[in-house]
Image (cartoon, rainbow, N blue to C red; front, side, top):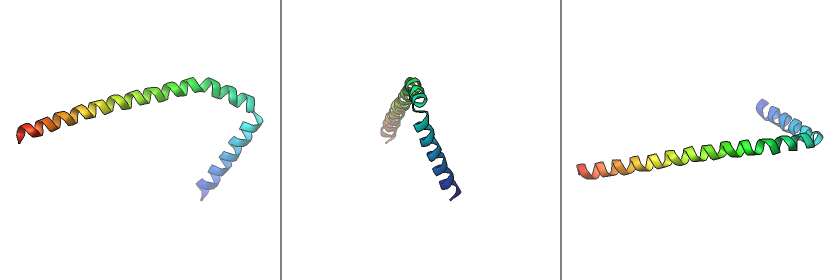
Length: 69
């Protein structure tokens, strides 16, 4: 219950700050957007590489199981 109340307080504070400091918040978001996009892109690339490695390992394991059968 405390976390719900605290979350609502922080949401209200963020909404109020965004409303009062609209120009500053928008300037921050414009500046932060390329950095956020870069980080999301890097995470997506790392996930893709890990997925390719997992698929290759699964194929090797499958080939190994067929050879043993």
